[in-house]
Length: 260
Image 1 (cartoon, helix red, strand yellow):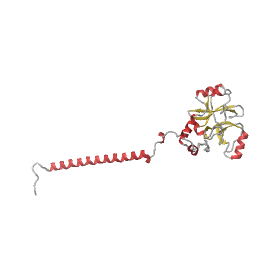
Image 2 (image 1 turned 90 degrees about the vertical axis):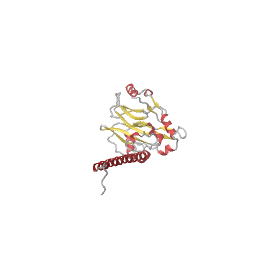
Image 3 (image 1 turned 180 degrees about the vertical axis):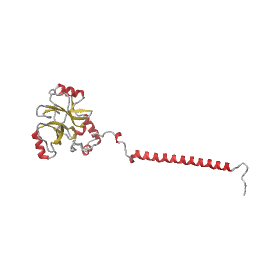
Image 4 (image 1 turned 120 degrees about the vertical axis):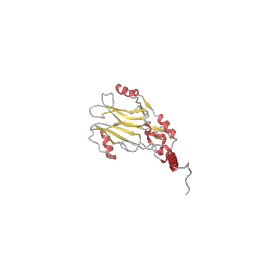
């Protein structure tokens, strides 16, 4: 049996094997890291191409000009008039332009409105959007909405492209409720009568709903059974389409059947 050269000892061999093993471990680690980087990059590219869920909080709100689905009332009833088919029939820019062209009046255009309420509307930067069907100032109404004892005010307030109904009880300068808030754009419809062919008009209007009106609509169309009717409600209408009646009862606002 051949002996090892004098300079090559068993200890040297063992140390050499240890060095080789260390080098192999480092190589394996590097290969592993490269594999992780490659797989991670592939998944990242795939996710950004639509294969993985997106963070919806980063997606901007879709407007009418982007063919949003038809709006609904708070009760979930569809509001006909702004369906995807309607939007497809006209250029998307037409809907955006119609939204910008909505006539919005200053509270000062309603001299019968108490000064305290007008001041509050100014403070909140409210304007009153006008529907295409009436050239007279409207969407400010007075009725017995919270009790039969006194007359209250209801105002359709538009701020930053959103409108809601503000309720001011008799003698008060601040609202006690804000109802049915939503984009003004959801209340647009095409081919508005008197607005020219292919025109688009704002179509939201509020009015006083007397007890008899509420009962008649319930008998005709069904829906939520009205409570004992002791005062007026607020008819919130999509002109020529449908409406819902907001009615104050037992400490909360109900949504009753309106026009259909």
